[in-house]
Length: 349
Image 1 (tube, rainbow, N blue to C red):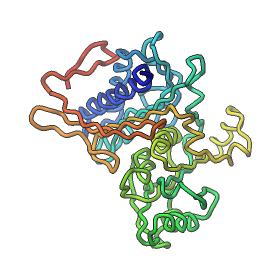
Image 2: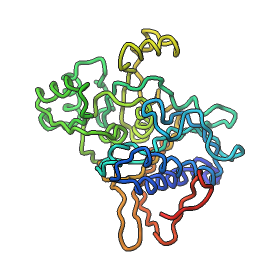
Image 3: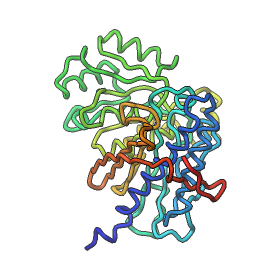
Image 4: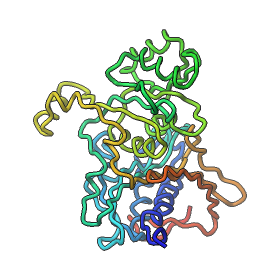
């Protein structure tokens, strides 16, 4: 039977084991005020898990450019050189490092992967690396994404609200819009408040926020604002699996970054105006997405500890069949270990 030989099918649960391990390691630093140590611990767990998997993973989207983080970087190769499956990955060991350090809700560990139908092809071309720190973003769920009348970054915000309300059969005053609580969003927030819709301001957690409108029985209707470029690729992978829509455009922070993009990345006016869909950022139909909750979020419950067990909740998605699996795992605290790359050894949780 063909599906028994499908390496992508086998790899899905391995990907979830990676985000589980990262979440469990991050928890050791939850609320302890050190986001760098938390990120290092989560990244070490992901590297360690790939060391014992039969998968060669090129890091197409990693950390560093935006966060100056100690984690997993673009261009790295994880796993054995002779792995039976070759993939590209986008990874954020902790989406919400500040949330983790401060003991706040909304933190998750997340990985997306892409693989090619033909082994000789380059999977890194499937996950679009964006050289800017930030992108403008707007994301909606499947009901809004379908049919005529589409949202657009080029349209006034009021027009987009009208489209979302019409397609969801809601009054604008009943819409819930998620926005990162940042000074750069002052005009967006003012416009939303003038429209009468409800606003959910979040301090961090860009990936989960963008995915929110596409979830089954969503609590939010629209995500809008300026957030990290690596996070845009991660959310695009999930939104593609869920059937929603996301549109993004490069947003230089200042003239220095704009000059850098022009001089070092070859950007033209056309590149600055280009709008990327979820399909542009995560190409093909061999996309996997896994996330594990560290602390409670609209996407996933956080880790719980009871009766000698750590209980993790993860979501695993596959774009080919739009399959969504929720995985609850009970980790025995006496016997569970995590393989770390830094020590090449198993450590207890």
